Length: 218
Image 1 (tube, rainbow, N blue to C red):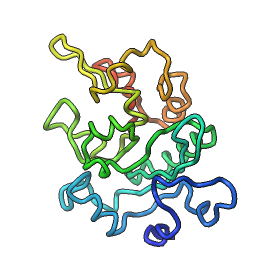
Image 2 (image 1 turned 90 degrees about the vertical axis):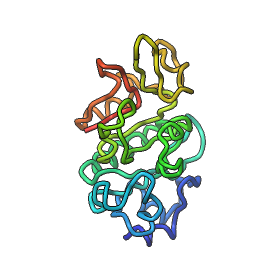
Image 3 (image 1 turned 45 degrees about the horizontal axis):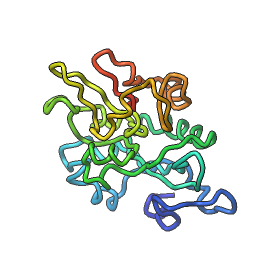
Image 4 (image 1 turned 120 degrees about the horizontal axis):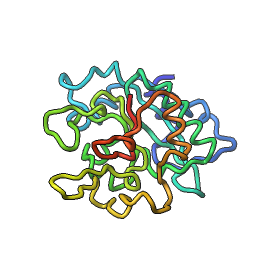
């Protein structure tokens, strides 16, 4: 089924039931090649026509998820590089099967490709043609669709610059203290960590230069 056909049956962000959900079930945890409607949605935001990686290298994923510990199933979406699409489909299906909470799964374009706005909304995302947070020149692995941020509000990027603690997004300051217990926290004992590591991803939370607890990349 093509992406244009799939749109007839679902709406991203809508709650969906787990019983009697055909034809939804045929769309769960699927990867689609981008169509022109999708490209128009992201062009000039996360993706720049003729400047970013080719559209044919991207895959659009439909990912049901649980926004919280309890509650309805919500249909999410993610744009990634085709090389990691099979990994992500398996990882997110395993997370779903264990009712692992992921609050939001929307394209970063819904936040005008503003990484801070997306993180502050606790939106999990992948592809965005941008530089790394502390440099205007070095491209992020997100620009290749090879990095994923999970529940970023509660798993911030932490840096010390000139003796000053910097937390991204700034709203995540309370969650920079990893000795605390709170929902959506990613650590080495966490299922999300284990699934990504088992698939060969590197965890930003282990970086000596400054942890990025939300970040997994290949």
